[in-house]
Length: 233
Ligand code: IPE
Ligand code: IPE
Ligand code: MG
Image (cartoon, rainbow, N blue to C red):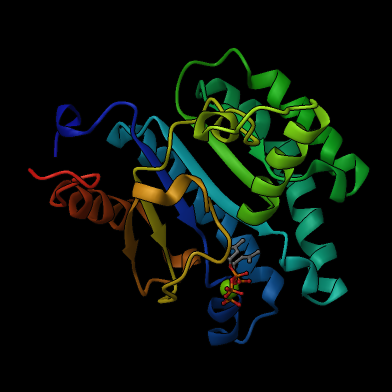
């Protein structure tokens, strides 16, 4: 597969699922599954750069994940804190631009602060854009867009572009390919507005086991799909 066959920009979105089941299989605490998930993410970012993917978005924590036990939520927040703080320099060296999508207000103040710091620090980078969806919900995002329009005092009819332009990360192109690991075949509130014409790819691989070969396989599947956008080809 050569880079010139890939569309540009090319946005791959991943629902990183199966950390808990991976840990359970190994009789480990769930949090170790999440830690192994961070390592899978590091591998995937490197592989994405190599494949010529321009935008990679990852679903890290949904607006519904607050329903989990407090200990797991606390563990995940610590992991986010630690990973952002420790990885930003490395990410910067690789010319990766880090963006976040989701409701920063609902997160612990220091985590939201680190997110702003990391976005500022990597804003001028020109390589891969990594969009981390944290406290993200597709429905919440659409509701937030509608509320911004109301707050702006909008009285004329709303167009699709008005919604698209008020998304959490409006400069990010629509996802071309959405991958979900762990055998589940649903979106779980991910990129609901943006997924309208995304190609979907499901794999049984649990997220902590995901690697460059799995990403390559998903992209190859994508290249065999015919996108019609409602028209006749
Ligand atoms: C995905 O793995 C990570 C998050 C939702 C934070 P899960 O924690 O959902 O893993 P399973 O689905 O229980 O295996
Ligand atoms: C989706 O996974 C959210 C993330 C990967 C962050 P979940 O494990 O929360 O989704 P459901 O509950 O199985 O739909
Ligand atoms: Mg899950």
